[in-house]
Length: 494
Image 1 (spheres, helix red, strand yellow):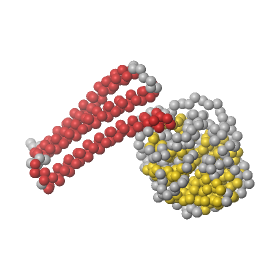
Image 2: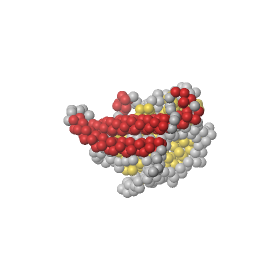
Image 3: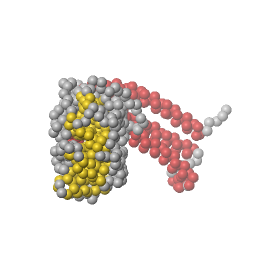
């Protein structure tokens, strides 16, 4: 009869222990469900000021936390048993961890390798479990402060840009690679109007500060100004689509299938622009109104920005100096200032406050394409870049940023809220994060397989005066999303 070696006997003991351990876990889970059900009945019978849905989410989360820690505890016990079994096997082979024997070269290497593997496994298991618990807790907190309210679906290609009107009626505008721009009812999500005058991708949309006019920039090397008239539909009750889900944490970058949607068949269209601005020799990537709405500025891949007179459509100034294609342009809300961003890793500030002097300042600080630079109400500019950073600058001192935000993904067209100066960062990795002006992270918008963006997020825009949705985002998944951000609660958590 073959005699079983000491090492194979030890291995068999380990397998038997693992089998009994898995059985004990199943028994524990079955009895645990009964106990947790009893605890839930007791807690639900107590008075609470929390909404029932939030209370139920918290109870589920705490139950998950308890189960995770219990399973982690059992796994740690099993790993300790493995370590003891290894020590016994080494001792049976004539080795020991005690005394001077560990100083011997071969044995020291073997013991160190074995124990380091077990130690690493223990650390990895503990880190993965606790990370999942912490991420789940953060995700639930984020859902309570940042809620998805409405999805605007109808474009047939990715949405590059969006904007909200500054006067009544308040509507959402989107600019898409499907050669159209659309106006939406914020409350109902219904398409109110579609502009089809461009022959190329519509890369930007901005609304006139006082009149019902829109400015769009396109890959057909033109910018169009067109008038619109819309009638808002009767708002319907807003459905709560912020359903909690356990996978609202980290995601891989693998592709998810796009939902095939039909374009809005009952949406009226505008096909002719009131004014067409032509003078660029390349794609017009962005455009914006100067304060007062009498002039507009455009940014192009021909490395220049142009300033036009709206009434005459004439070119007033050509702003040159960037070494590579422009990516964005933005105007100051109250002063005649323009900032242009470029692939040359810089952005430039153009000052038109004095008609006789058109000064320009160059801001250098990024190491990759500056995807956007926007003004705040005060004397700050916030710039985002493909180098995965966002920098806050003082207009009076352009030598170095006053704050730097480092992220894990390229940043696209950012937006800064007017009142609280909260920066919304849309990322290539489908995430949207919120920071304050000092660089402190406030929140990450919830995202799961059932809600949120499924492709790169291209743009964000704040609309703090709207009670339904005060933040909008859009991306390559052909949809725009309206979010309700509880700003007081967000700042309180800070």
